[in-house]
Image (cartoon, rainbow, N blue to C red; front, side, top):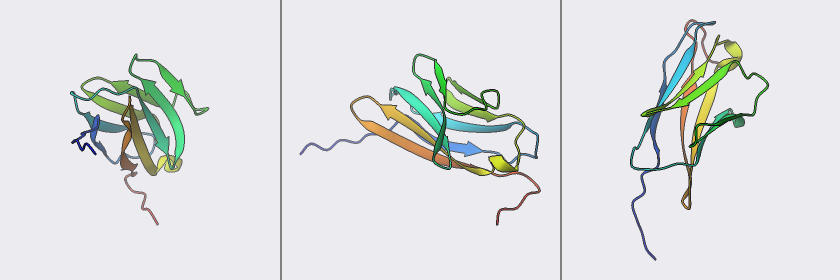
Length: 116
């Protein structure tokens, strides 16, 4: 059996708490030496969007204008007009050719709203 050390394309993902109706931003650091086929964003396990390495985006939600994703030196995910229903855990999954997938999770919290 051959073992190797694999560092996936997503190194870490973070978000900053915002007030309702503000724009929420998630930022995922990307390992520049790893290539990915796509990055999928899911909210509580339900896919919202997939961004492919060629720059195209597939939306899996009816709220096309609410979410944006951008890949540059990092992966940026934006939620416009954040509301109480956006408070959740978001999973960012990168598919890597011939190696499977890796994921990171970050939560969105709203200022002035407390989780139960």
